[in-house]
Length: 123
Length: 215
Image 1 (cartoon, each protein chain N blue to C red):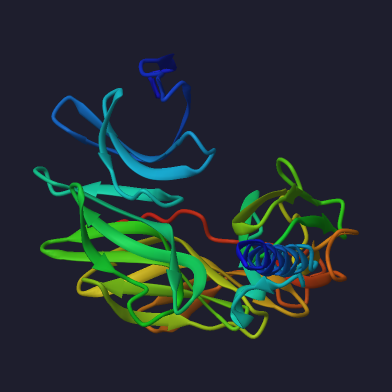
Image 2 (tube, rainbow over the protein chains, first blue to last red):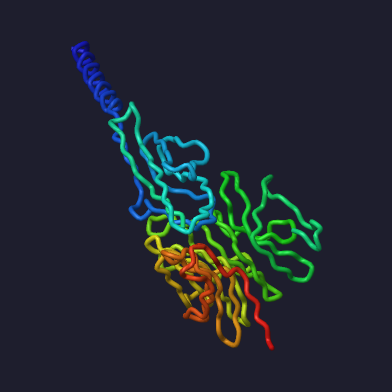
């Protein structure tokens, strides 16, 4: 009787352990949180640095589509709240110009990837 | 800082350079408005007295743009980066000595005051209000919006201002889609002079300084 009870207990523990393992191994679904109006930043022509803010639930990376705007420091990170700094050249023209910083959350270990585009307008 | 061509003041803070944007004097003391770098590389708005930190005005990134004095207190304007309605934006401030006197972003708009002027007991600051990608030159009097100069080209900016006989004069530019930046002097809420040739292809002009002469 004791042996049967022991086996039953062992079975239950094993089941719980497997269930827990199964839950842990499920890949993260990437998400980037940012307010809608936080997707656009407007800067004066003589401003040469700035930042964008977002929150990612997994690893992320960022890239600029313009040579006059570069991400300062490491353009990659892990989950959490992020203030991503960038440097830009002064705008010598008298027309607005626009750069986009694309932030991608997720990699091969996650359940796909997700991107957000941040628009930087320099007057 | 230089006096008569000689460097008289040079200093660092937190083992990094100090950004100095404006200064005022009380007696023999220099008050410098600007920013210093914290350990994370952020610039924090600050006032230095001579070569020492006098006031750290925020723990958040920003800078002091301009400084004025009435002989006893130091007034300064600038911004720190704050989260307003869930959005990180420049939150404009006027500080008296080490404390916030006026918050210029209380209506939720991004603001960046760049000039400060004292006229008796009144404090005027000029800067920019950003709404929907439009940067509009704005003058505040004692913390309240006095004048806003909108521009069809999406930006106007005040580079200098003074008061005279109860009027306020501001010089700077507004952007015209064809002519680029157009130099202009505003008197109160109206354009007093447009100094650029709007038909010129030589884009880009601005009023950066003004003097008034009594005849």
